[in-house]
Image 1: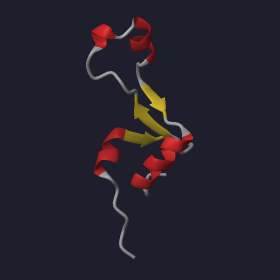
Image 2 (image 1 turned 30 degrees about the vertical axis):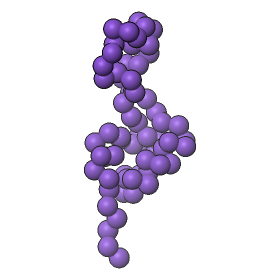
Image 3 (image 1 turned 90 degrees about the horizontal axis):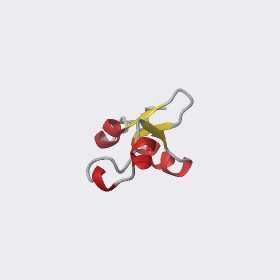
Amino acid sequence: MPKMKTKSGAKKRFSMTASGKVKAGQAGKRHGMIKRTKKFIRDARGNTILSDQDSRIVKKYMPYDR
């Protein structure tokens, strides 16, 4: 059987934890920070763990990263 392809956009944006959850960057931080509240900017630091529904989609894009 041929190898399955990994979506190159997904491998740049997501990574897996040791327990199999999907890590992603926090959304909404690219521009427009002046109109965001200080609380939003503070809470949007770092990375986040995707929900089960979203991680199911991402795992299809990355078949070997489990």
